[in-house]
Image (cartoon, rainbow, N blue to C red; front, side, top):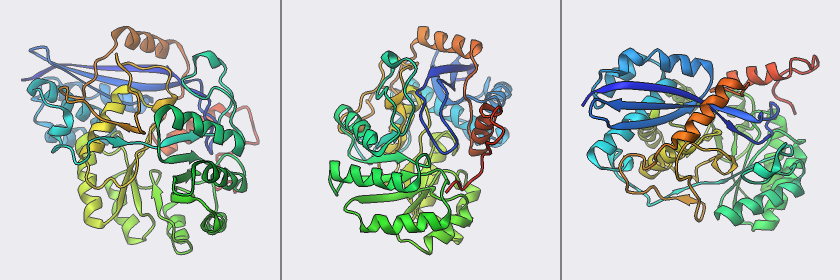
Length: 406
């Protein structure tokens, strides 16, 4: 079995104006679909971010991928030397091999250690959608604690989520603390809550708020990236007893040792896009188990191919202790024929071969054409995200992407 063709297909999909500590998401976001085809017609697909650096790296991999045996992935990983690009190809390789041998991807990863992957309700403060009739969920403005409670109800009622995450760093910190208080009152003190300010708080502010959270009648499961650097996280950890999670400062294997040495984090948020695909996530799982670190899962504005990959690898990773994050309920577009639905906040990957998804060719073509014609938000790292938002705010001469904000 040899790969004869590799397609790199950027797409632009509809995205709501979700807020974060840098600004707001644009109306269109970019993703990239990778499709591998063998000489005998077997196909595998992967998905990753959509910025030019990722696309260029994937386009530069044609000579390495075309002609390779799908089972000889280690050679490709070392020759490519780019975990982000390799991650998309690695996912497509698992999908291809799974289809070829009639096995679901989770079996290729060692089999399920849990029957279904649990996900959190990922809540955002947001502006009103410009076209509310086409919104997947919550088209209205959400810029207050009270409005966030209404958003949470929509997520929980529709998907049955049992863990609630709030993207913070948007309102003044005490307003975001009030949001947690109201969520605790509404959903009960045993509902796990999370807050992710994206590094917007100083150590002093984060320390004060964490101590006030301890006095509240609600359950904070962990704080995610409350402060602006790994060193700041280490300082914060000396002040508070909440677990601290990160996907901003531990995003590759070389970051793990400094994080452990400084005791800066308790939970690493895995991501098969960053960490070298599904095989990279499994390697991270072994490392985290060895070092007694918790593992969750990071999310971006992904489509159905990534949703399937996340569910498969989450079911196969023993060390995942926390419900995974996902933007998927926000997405109004998709490239797969049968979009996923959450039941009890969970997705149970089917036992269909590979990832168990099929591409909707007409939607793939439509979203690819949209990418070609439109200006889209595209980033794959914290630095590139800050750069994208800086470009968007270029006319506002008083705006700087400084952290911390508070």
